[in-house]
Image 1 (cartoon, rainbow, N blue to C red):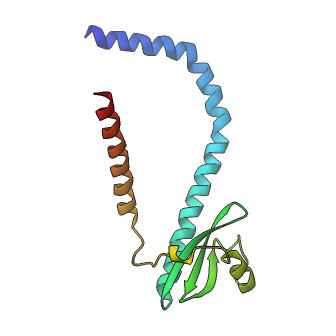
Image 2 (spheres, rainbow, N blue to C red):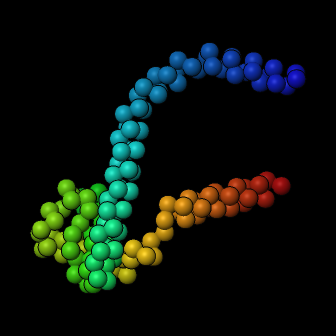
Image 3 (cartoon, helix red, strand yellow):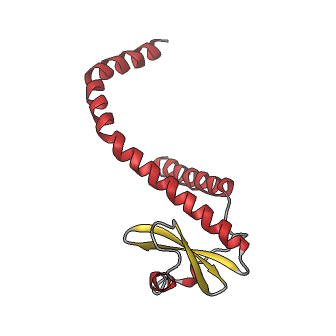
Length: 142
């Protein structure tokens, strides 16, 4: 019990000392963190929409490319680019701009909707990567 009270004492001591600084930092970082979270959610939404559209097409696939620093998913029907998600990044009806968007892209990186890992598979893969890194660190420390 003596160890627990010591930890609580340190928590109170450092909370009083650094608490105001943390509050100011949290206020300053709130907007950038919110903007980043919205960007990630929009990216996931665009990926999901592109794969859903590709599933409705014959030999449909999707390819992630970057346009002016923004992630854009280009949907293919066979070898022909059909549309882009998010639609605000590239005008959907302008196929020449889609062609210019993917002119330097590696077309072997396209994914088919049935081959795309689901959210559960991605979470398991991320967990396995973290566990592997943690094991490597603990082995190194021993």
